[in-house]
Image (cartoon, rainbow, N blue to C red; front, side, top):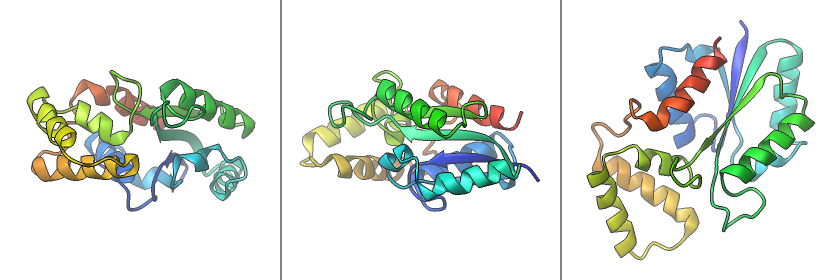
Length: 189
């Protein structure tokens, strides 16, 4: 069976990225069994041409067991990383590595961020998809709290989001998910 590959941040079995992608695939009624997930850990690992995950991916492509690839990577913030931060920088650098690996003809990219700011991460996309009143509540809490660390911000935001809205945590019908849903559908066409 020919599979498609989804490369994402975090672990390939226990990360928010992986969870959201699997939930979306299920919602779209796409066959998860045809997907090979590659968890790259941190974003910087995507930009290392000699990453062992790329070796495994390339081998599977050469063996024709994988025929399409989708990169799902956080935009992060330009102010924190002038090379890889922000939507434009992340897109440019991913395209560079995709070209270096000769994967451009079978690859696509989806950058997770707040679509209005072109910065952020998956949690920013999730926050941007909830009703304004709920979003303001979470932002007000974060602003008046003493949470300062950027690394903790993602985890804190996700915990607040899932605790506050446990019954309907992700609104995949929101327009902010349309592009990602289409890219997932395209993997199977």
